Length: 254
Length: 216
Image (cartoon, rainbow over all chains, first blue to last red; front, side):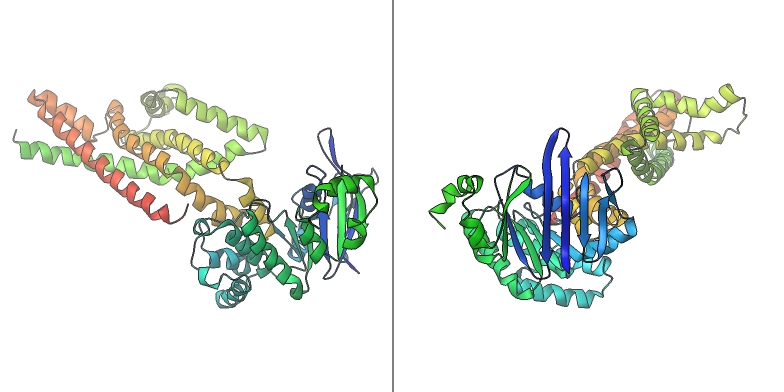
């Protein structure tokens, strides 16, 4: 069974059609990278998948729960709030701008939702939190506040915060775009290390060699449609003109 | 009249001023938040009504508002109220006026919050109520504290407007003493008391700001 299924997704902002007809599937534990030029709809696709945006049309399904599907008029109709709340625990999202809560220290950032949303005990939450911070190489930063950390450290806290809720799929929306190359490296290393957690990951990124190395599947998007998808090898060696044009500058470093 | 007698009389007045001050804050701060929500409501009727309300409260003199609250029931509806109503009238007048100002301060603070904070909270599964109470409000308080301090200091001085409907607060007392004694002293002492009052308020608000300085 697919963990995530999106079919014929369409989304416009005013007259601008951002997603034209997108279908994609993510299996349990699968790592999918979405690449493509800016403005191709990658982020919007993630925002539709994580319910930050509503689709105009299309199907959205997590496991066997239908979150949205077309009504007879061909418009996306969403499930009731209860279903959506339930399904929301399946996925997490790491933002480009981290979006940590500045008034809480690192440990509170990671554990607060575990305690107040998942209703686990504080002790249990802090155990989960400490394990994750260790995995992120931040165990000595538990009492720091976000403003005291570098961008790379903040992003790793944000990853720990998302993982603490134990999602089955974690989305990354250009997780390193706000970071310099050095900090980018440390964050990408951490994301690679998540492979052994066996959770699915969907990563929107401009880091081509990273996408090539980590992904089970690469999706190339342009102008609101999926142009190519397949294994990293297939996509990066694609003869498609649009793909070639996009990859042009990366070819040498790959 | 001895200076000590003047001071005792004025301190009695000061107690009334402080009570007006505290009761106004106690009610107008939470009421302001409710009005701010009304102002930001997606319901057009609610947001329009609160918008007009705020506009009137900010656009007309507080003294006039006190008159309306105090004399309005009689002149408009022919309701006779006991003279002690003047105290309630002062509280009501101040609370509804200050709530409007606080509402605008809350609104500016809430609307200045980056949308990413809401999105992160949504993704983590917080309810709307939890998001506001746990994540948004604490940060809003830090952001608006300097503006709130301004209003609170203005309120200390505005309590003297209760003079207009003859409530026996400090300014009313000082004015009466000054007339009967044909002396400037009561007014100067009252001025000194207002200053000290505000000095304490500013000190406490500064402490509160420093306390919230632990994060950026």
